[in-house]
Amino acid sequence: MKTMLGMAAAMTLSAGVAIAAEKWDMPMAYSDSNFHTQNGKAFASCVRTGTGGDLDITVHGGGSLFKGGEIKRAVQTGQVQIGERLLSAHQNEEPIFGIDSIPFLASSFDASESLFAATRETLEETLEEQNLKLLYSVPWPPQGFYFKKEVNNVADMEGIKFRSYNSATARLAELTGMVPVQIEAAEISQAFATGVAESMISSGATGYDRKVWESLTHFYEVDGWLPRNAVMVNMDAWDDLDEEDQNVVMGCAELAAYSGLWRSKQYTDFTMKGLAENGMSVGPASDGLVGELKEIGETMTTEWLNAAGESGEAVVKAYREATK
Ligand code: PCA
Image (cartoon, rainbow, N blue to C red):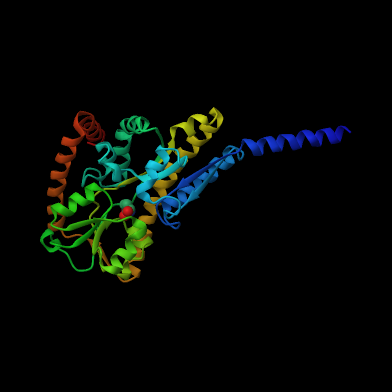
């Protein structure tokens, strides 16, 4: 009898736990093999384990649930509870979102981390006003140019159809005489194959993930900047979690920031080799080209500072102080 009661109690308990389990969907825009997606899956698993199954996050990679361009709004409006997005693609909403894509402001992993540290508070406040809680952010590897011909200076770029992924890359295209067309990473293989685009600036990672050697021939290392993905939660979904679960999520987020950075560094070397092994010419851009791009970077820094006003200026100043 006692045993029966015990069993009944245990069953009620496990039923109770099952009912309490919270399920979140987490759209991510990049391919399943990409390190951001792998890192997001490890984050979800950390949360599942840490909360004893209380919070169960399902990652949907490759833009399968929402495309990159739709993810931020989907999280804001509560269509999904959590998601990852390249924040610089929303610079038109708030200039601070684009601070990581200013050419040559922060062009190494260390600099990217310092810039993010200087930006974090302002970013969190800005996102909070949009009903979003920032969990963690991971940099893409340094950005370089892809072409289907040799390019040694800006004049060689005239008229090329250039795939952009945010307003900074579109502006860069304009300033180099190219013609920008905005295309999601998930769709670039087709865009290059059909000639809708002939060039882009991105990481070795994205070129490798999308097998761009099928259409393009050259990768020039520029180390222009390291744009970042941010994982964000809908603020109402966040507030609905109890404090213990919130603590687990924050712990897992910290781990994900750390492991994501490490994965990004490791993927850089791996994908550079991968591009070369698949027949692309891979190497540094010429000094002349880098010099011209740095001048364009100056112009874009000034433009960004003008748009971002005092708070943006304060962030850049704090970053420069911290890294001088
Ligand atoms: N890959 C993403 C953003 C930056 C990067 O390296 C893309 O090309 O869309």
